[in-house]
Length: 507
Image: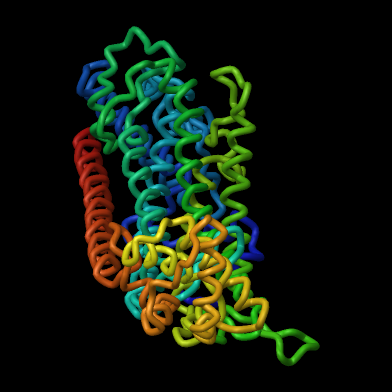
């Protein structure tokens, strides 16, 4: 993906932006709009009504020809490609006479609409899943460049403890993996067929719903016919937009950290100058983080539209049109478009990651300029010298006060002052005649970030061995997700080919 697309994506209207979304080789061959999906549904219905003898085979051939005629007409330049069955049915009647409307036996625009929604959304979900996988790969590649470089981490916006670059980025990788897991879990509920539920109570025709599901590549039938059309669009939509919002929140968290660096005179992470950075029209020194702003805006759109869908669906009786995206497929807050937006977000986020430059010496200098390693000093006193934790904590806190008060870095604290401060800290807890139980070398080492990182022993910590283990685990999880995506794509392609064969058998 060319990074030149960033300004275009940010400025384009939603419909134009969605038009440039990469949707895979199979989808690129034909326009997969509502008309396309309606035609797929009609093909599956035609096969089923003939197989179940709801219509005779001779009529099946007429339906076959009429459906093909509607496709040919809709393929003409400037022709209408409606997703409304009643509009398309007029063309079917014109091509084959009123008898071809028996195709609609046991169906309603309600179950057609619910099925169209799921057919469309599942393609969007797979595209979004694929783009998320690519973004995760870009994040891991960035982490691998400097896995053990030390940098500051923050809580309450204040430097807290030193970690490593790999450890820091893997935290976001873990969050993305959870989003991927949620998307995979939701697929099981998404890829169920409502077709054959009719308006909401099925019909007296012997409609073979499992056969319809199989022809359209669904894994199963969404059984309760009232749920299929009227209830499931609400909770299914909420689940899907929630997944999209979850990924957007993770992205915006990382972007917030990077953006904060741009306020520094010497950032330890920034974007390489190029298409994603902009200059001021008046201030020569400015290098504006345009790419960060554009991606943050995309994340805001995903989160905002996801929340709007929740409000639209809230307090609406089942069966209303408010929460059903097939009523207005261009409406930005509907699930299919929220997911499309998330695809663009992941794509552009991956491009952004590839421009990031990490300055390891500058990051370490930032750590060494403050006192975020004093947690380990207190731990050393307890672990190696049997000093009560609160005593050691108080001593370390007073070291910080002294150092900051005298404009000293941790490495510049005189050992003699440390000894004096310890005596006073111990007296605070009623410990008389106490002396600092650490030698000068041990004290100095206890105030280094390198020692604190190396001393970490817990699972999931920033120590090199754990970072390497977690890196390998994240790569393995990503490989599984890539394989899952490819298998789902292949299964849908196989189902589409089988549908074409079965439909061709009607002629």
